Image (cartoon, rainbow, N blue to C red; front, side, top):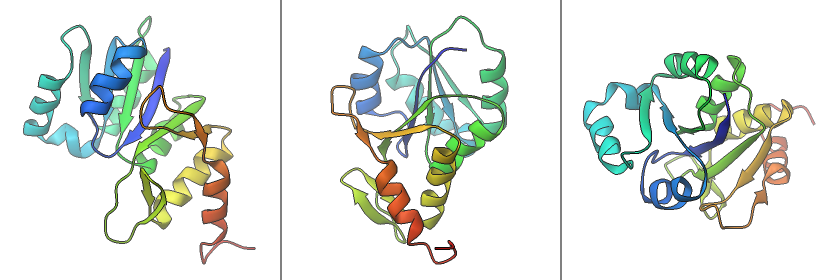
Length: 167
């Protein structure tokens, strides 16, 4: 199961993914792993219209996405999730990847900006830290030609400010 990229992007399939990432990395299957998107017929239809016809789009619940990732062979797969919690779910359920690209986590109430393209709340920080603890690289860049930014120091710093973390 060659995973070309695992990316957090709360917009899932959009221009940066289609015009940026899908044009430079080998992808046979674009797997959107999201319980919410899997239930939203309109969102699935819009994503299908955006993805090039030579790339198979799969929009699956987290549980179904893990099942697909465990059995698919001889394909290059890009996995899109909307949050660190979803990336952690996939990792915890036996799907191994070496690096996690944090592309877009936008501002919502309760989140704070830690990079220009990354806003996170305490839960996001906890899940990113847990992913890092499993030996996964955390890098942020919007497009593949952008400089890879190692965000582990930022995540560690934010994690240590959480009230329930022993100092």
